[in-house]
Amino acid sequence: MVFSSSLFLLYFLPVFLLFYYFADVKYKNYVALAASLFFYAWGAPTFIFIVVASIIADFYAVKIMHTSQGRKKKLLVAFSIALNIGLLLYFKYANFFVENFNLVVENMGGKPSEWVKVALPIGISFFSFQKMTYAVDVYRKVHVPLKKISDFALYILMFPQLIAGPIVRFNEIADQLEDRRDNENVDNRLTGFFRFALGLGKKVLIANVLGEYADSVFAMQPDGMTTATAWMGVIAYAFQIYYDFAGYSDMAIGLGRMIGFDFLENFNNPYISQNISEFWRRWHISLGRWMRDYLYIPLGGNKVSVRRLYFNLWLVFIISGFWHGAAWNFVVWGAFHGFFLIADRLFLLKFYKFIGKYPSIILTFVITLVGWVLFRAESLAYAVDYTRRMFSFTGGPTFYISQKVWIMLTIGAFFGFWAAAGSIEKWQDKLFGKKKKLSTLIYMTAASVVLFVLSLAAITSSGFNPFIYFRF
Image 1: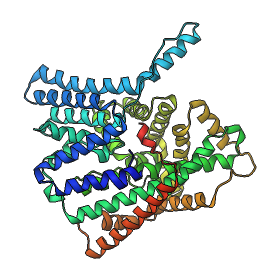
Image 2: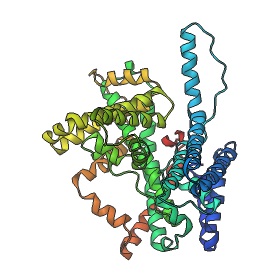
Image 3: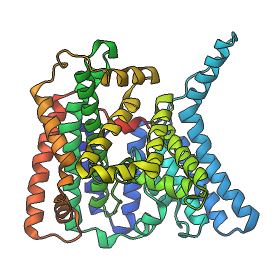
Image 4: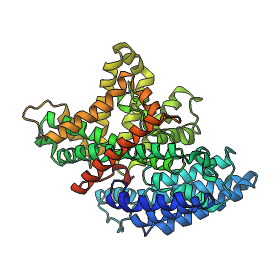
């Protein structure tokens, strides 16, 4: 059940909000948890028992750890981390490792191992990180553990951000899990609905349209396309994945605000970045912060030799790429971005400063486009051939682009780069800030209804409605 479906919009969400708003304060978490369990079981009934069992194991391991000392405390936090990494390795990466092992065996003349492919539980990459965050934050005494297992289960399974984030750190939401009455007001509910409708519009009206075109281009063989077609295909994909993922994050943040939760932002106009380092401060912010605080800093952070620092940076981004998907093209995508982060520190930042703001934005966008080819391609070989076609400068007509795609590509590019003009921050503060005028709320509500109706109409008239990050 995806957010941009008639089932969710017309049935699940209204019924949930009806029960939630009319429930007594002490029962609201139970209503949200019941809805989250139903939401997950609807999409992955086979895995709900595994997820619940791991939640129980983590909760009691951390609870005992909190009152333990010395070696026992370290063993328990290690158990929690190992449990979650183990589940992630088995369900997400077992197929990858077995397939590559069999490939090596076959090339050596041996007989490959028989293997029944493992299905991927929905959202495992996200909730595994959140469970590890809980264990580490309690171990570091950043926050005390939750008293109720139901509150912990809600933290892990909360349906607004369960499937594709943002990754919510425990210490940032712990107090809200126990008491968020101050956040539950009409202002937040209307703002949340606007944010949800805005994300729905990004996803359905822009990302879906561009996605159909991008898919048609990436279904072609690179040798059969012109350079212009290759560029248009990856540009369409760049805006598709942005509005798809940022749209989902908007919906998650909006849903959270509608029920009193305040999730941190996950995107901040990434395509106006003037270098790749800045891009990663603006793109999938919750993942970048997680990798920094729970992987990069424990590896030594900036307090190591220059050579070790560059190695750690590259390693973290290779792991980040592998986190996105169990395939070599994702590993190379991570290494590609890691390379440019190192290059920024070595010489590129000086070069960007020399050429100025707007040329830097264009050059950085081109670099991200090459990276998106690696991300979108079904194989590393295809990505190499596609990239070669982008820079081979072959002539010929561009693959047919409909008027609808042109319109959405123009709108997507306008809003994707609009922030570079420097005027968007005041609009964001006015729309998403804590205090708003009554007139602003009225306009937001009207805009929300229009976006919601237009998106719902698009959903009912189109069968194309994937969410890119659902497969991670």
